[in-house]
Length: 373
Image 1 (tube, rainbow, N blue to C red):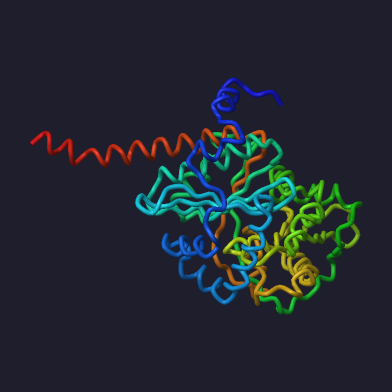
Image 2 (cartoon, rainbow, N blue to C red):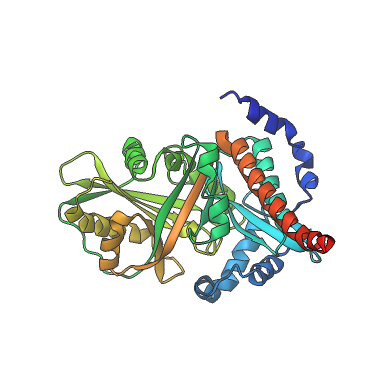
């Protein structure tokens, strides 16, 4: 797709790929895992609820991060800017599909200049590489800062190239007793179901979700798993589809992601996406949800946690609670496709420019007041 004039201007303003991090004053993988986690603690990123779920597995989580970082920047890289005097900022970026990345854990020691640097450097590098099909970020809607940055990006990028979806995050006991619905037919995915999977995923989560998750090109994450294997880890995805007993159109699906525990501190890497057709009658929801989750349980037989992280929409909430799941929080999933990255860069740059202008104005006020008197 040819670039418009504004996109071309943005592209022309970027440094060369070989110089991109130096140009923004950013370092790549400069901190050890212990130093990264210490920064997360200092900045309050590990709030009590999140810390309580993470701490019992912290040793394994640290080891998984160390292994991921051994791959250079092929699986996980951490960008940092600033210094001890002015405060550090950091963002972690990990490969969720072969051509898709998730940026996460944006933290700052009260240094918005450094935050801007890591955000722009990471986006610029992705643009210049030209091989990243999508960028994702997950954030709590009540967290004001990421909601202001990422929650508004569709206004800049457009609905055809980006989306921000609000989900519900549940913890489903791994050993929950789940009945199978008598009138629901559950089918494990095989290549003959490509069209059906794309259909149900599109109506449930939208076309941006289908593209970013590579559901039609690598539904089981076989390609990216090869990269994870190189550092002794695994990345996989299993899918089941739900049909009415004698119908051929899917009414739901469950997508079970597996990956190194704690790569994301909310365990998004091991989430179970529950997709339901928006027109599914209320009376059928419980059977469909229970049947899908019952099938997907086999993907979590060796899962380290006692509960499976389930991502669902409001339509599934009553059934999940009835089946024993605990609602933890709302989560927003922001996604930008490759063709929208230049607009995303401008969106972030514009946000931080306004923020820094306010910070500078606020810092000048005492001196101005002093001059007036």
